[in-house]
Image (cartoon, rainbow, N blue to C red; front, side, top):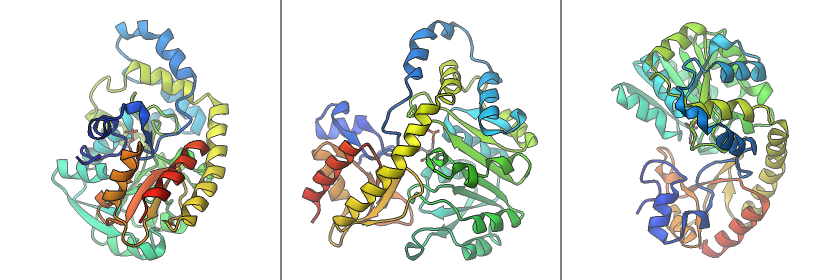
Length: 356
Ligand SMILES: Cc1ncc(COP(=O)(O)O)c(C=O)c1O
C-alpha cells in the first residue's frame, strides 16, 4: 500500500493500517508540521468556546482579519481567510482562470490539481539539481513567453528553497500574474525581508497565499489566508462557499498569532536544528539540499531506492515522504521534516540501519 495514497504525506491512518502500529506510535517526518505541536491556547479555546458552535461563524471573518492585518501590517480589505491554503490555491486558480500556468517542478501537487479541475494547461519549468533546485532567471525569461500565470512555492515544496530576490524582481517585471504560495514562509528566519506579502496588496499582478496550519500545527482545523489587491480579494471571495472558515478556526487563528513566545521558540529551534540535522545526515553519505525552511530534500546514496527505504523505516515506526512522487524527481529522493532533537536522533539511528 502506498503511504501517499491520497497524494500527500502525514496519512497516519494508511500507515497504521499497513504496518500494524497505532497512529500515535509513528514518528512522522512525512508531513512538515511544527514538532512543538500547537500553542497551548488551542486546547483552551476548544474547551472554553464549544458552546459558540450553536451560532454560524462570522462570514466576514472580521476579528481574525483584523489580527492578521495588525500582525503583518497589511490593510484588512486585502485579506481573505480560507479553509486552509489548499482552498485558496483552488479559488485563486478559478478566479484568475489562466490559459497556461507555469509550475516549477518539483512542486506541491495541489497546484496541478486546481489547474486540471478547470481544464487549463501547464507549462513545466524543471528545476535543476545542479542549481540545487533554485529557480533561475533564465527559467523565467523562457517561461514568460509561454504562460500567463506563474504559480510558485516560496519557499518551494519539496525543495525547501526560497526564490532569490533577483528572480522575484524579474517575475514581477514580466507583466504576467504571479501567485506565490508562502505556506512555509513563517518558518523562514528572514521572513520579514523576503516575503512579498507587503507588495501583494498594491500590485494587481501579485497574490500571496499563506497557511497557518504548519507553523501552528493545526492542520486538522484548516486555516490559511491570502493577500491581494482588494479587487481580486472580492473576486476570489465571490467564488468561496459561505462560512467556509469555521468558528473554532477563526478563534484559534486570532489567538495563536498573539503567542509570541511560541513563535520565538519555533524560529530559534529551527535555526539550530536544521544545521545539526543537515550535518548528521550528510555524515551518513546522504546529499542534503540547502533548505530555507522546516524540511529537507535529501538524495539517497547509490543503490538505495526511496520506496524500499520508506517501507523499511515505516516498519520501524518512522514515516518519510517518497519524493519520487513529485514530477521532476526520481527514486533517489526523499523529503523529511525537521523535528525535535530526540526525534531527529532516532531518525539518524534508524536510517543508518536501513541504508544500503
Ligand atoms: C506548499 C504547500 N502549500 C499549501 C499547503 C496546504 O496547506 P493548508 O493546510 O493550509 O491547506 C501545503 C500542505 O501540505 C503545502 O505543502
